[in-house]
Structure formats: C-alpha cells, structure tokens
Amino acid sequence: MIENGISEVYFYFLVSGILVFLLTKLIKETEKYCYYHFNKIYCLHCCIIRKKLPKKEQEFLALKVPFYNKLSNTQKKVFEHRVAIFVVNYRFKSRGGLEISKDMKLLLAASAVTLTFGFRNTRFPMLDIILLYPKKYTSVITKKIHKGAYNPRLKTLVFSWEDFLLGNKIINDNINLGIHEFTHVIHLNSHKKKDLNSVIFKREFRALKKMIYNDVTLKKKLQTSGYIRKYGFKNQYEFIAVLLECFIETPKEFKALFPQIYKRIKKMLNFNFLGY
View (cartoon, one colour):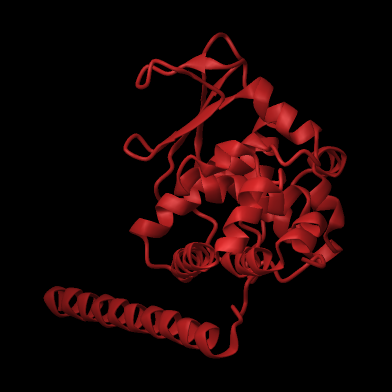
C-alpha cells in the first residue's frame, strides 16, 4: 500500500510538472505571436498578489520620483509592487563607510522600475548585487575613476551615490546615472535571455542601429545637434544608455528632434502609456 501510494504521488507530481511546463511554453509562444502580429504585450501589469508599500514610502516616492506622480492610481500600485519586489530581490552593499537606508533602496528600485515599466518580467537574471560608494571611486578593475559601472561577470552594479542623487535631482539635463547604468543591465541581459522583452529590446536596437547606419543625414544630425552628449558615441552600449536617459528625462524634445529614433525606443521599452 505504501509503495503504491508513493508511486501515485510521484505520478501525480510528474504529470503536474509536465502540464505546467507545457502550459508555460504555450503561454510564451502565444505571447510572442500576439506581439508580432498585433504589436501588443497582453497582461503587462497582471499580478495575482501585489505587495504594498507603507504609506510613508508611498509618500516618499511621490516626493522624489516624477515618473511615479504621472501614473494613474492603478499604475501606481503596480509601480509600488515592483519597487517592493526589487528591494528584496537584490543585495545592497556599500564602501567608504556609506550607510544604506531604506530610502536609498527605494530610489534605486524606482530607477529600475521606471525604465522597465513597459516590461512584464522586471527581474534581471544577470544582477545580484548593487554596490554603493559615497562619491566617485577608483575601479579596482580599470584603475580609473568612475561614477558607475556594471560588471556582468560579477553580476554587480556600482554607483557613486552622490552622482546617482544628482542625476535624480536635475530632471531635464539628460544625465541620469541610474537610468544609464540600468540600461547596461537590460542591454546585456537581452543578449543572454530569450524572454519576450529581451527579444523586443534586442530586435528594436538592431533595427535602430541599421536605420542610423543607412541614413547619413540622420547620423550627422545626431552628432551635431548637441542633444546627445558626446559620451554616447563611445560605443553601442554607451549610445543606447545615453539615448534612454534622453528618452526618460526629455521625451517631448526627443520626439520633436528625432521622431524615428524616438519611435524605435518607445517600442524597445514598450512605453505605451503616459503620452510617450
């Protein structure tokens, strides 16, 4: 009787596991089909159980995060849930005697959630640790002074806290360290992962590079307009990071100057809300 019982339980779990696997596969393929044919990601902000932030933390976001204030009440709940998830998903470490507060974690999470608000899956598999320095620091790897850096091998994202705060304080200069460095995480993640958002990001960025390469006039305008800072032309990784800083901070100006590029980035991030 015991052996039969064990066999039945094993069979039950085996069948259940297979069904869950097949159902997950079906959902993912259906999702891709819907996006490619209807250009839409369904159930973008669906969640069975949402985590809530205490009222004090909600008020903090309202005070410090302009993007959060633009959201509807329903969208704010999604934003809060994702911030709460982010804070517990990653390890926060510091150097130079910097003490990490809950408010600091909330601000870091808010940067990541803002950038990925058009994504369904906001977990970064290639990120485990967020390391904070009080100010600019000398990298042990490059031996150069940095404001921020992403090391995919160590799954670590590094920030100068002073410069991170400055990027959040000035909201229209197209310099935002949080957005910049989290873009690097998303970009490299898209090379390794096959979830829908990674596929979209990679595909749209490839199309964007091709469009600029084939349009000499557009390329020259990018280089001479003064809108895109020079650091963005260092390589493809810095280019997309700087573009996304502009997209988040000054979307109206971006759209007016470079409507074709703006459209690509909008699709890349699936930003179909807030008038983007």
